[in-house]
Length: 270
Image (cartoon, rainbow, N blue to C red; front, side, top):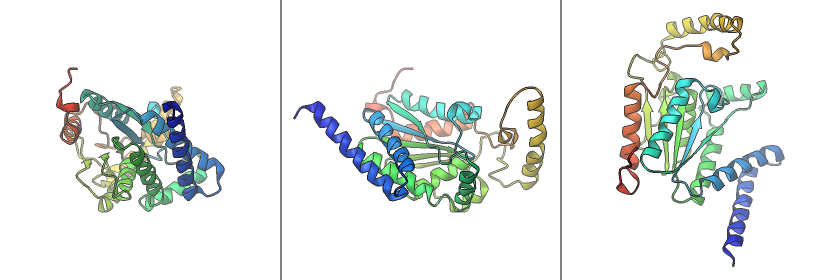
């Protein structure tokens, strides 16, 4: 058989499997099934020749594109991506949006968050299992901050056989700490090395003060002609993990280097 035809046949078979997996979660909802299948096939076809799949689980509601994320959150994703490349590996970067922007979806997500993402984490774990089974040499790194960190941890807990999935979790909120599970494939960063994280430490007085000040800060931005999310005006002390902070960068670089080393044991000049 012609090699080109064999590849087409393989992709067709894999797409059928992805569609069947989608139906397990969404039944006859054709729109959601198609979205699920398209996402899996996008990752599969683009990661076929890569060493790593890097997945960013955004903080908050999990809806913000990377280019519109807070600067420090972007810096972490960019820093991890750069470190993997420095180690000599090829990588594919994708985001995982766990909520749609409608009020109804956010209300459902609020319930999910309160239940430690019990349903959505199972879906993502199934997706990662599918990808790693079909791409047997692919390594996966999830990056999550705040609510995204909690979601990443829930995914890891629902994927007991996902040995090639690594999770970097920064600033996991206090309510989830008792449910968090840390494995050898998990890096939990609970401090930026400069000051205590008010959200991690559940500093209620500071949190209330910051939440109450946010609408006034948002109004000032609006009066100056700057359209900005209200959530971006909630500046929790210590709840930022910029890549430029020495302790944050050190922990992540050491974790990645220790776990994966340089490709073919050859240090790459940068």
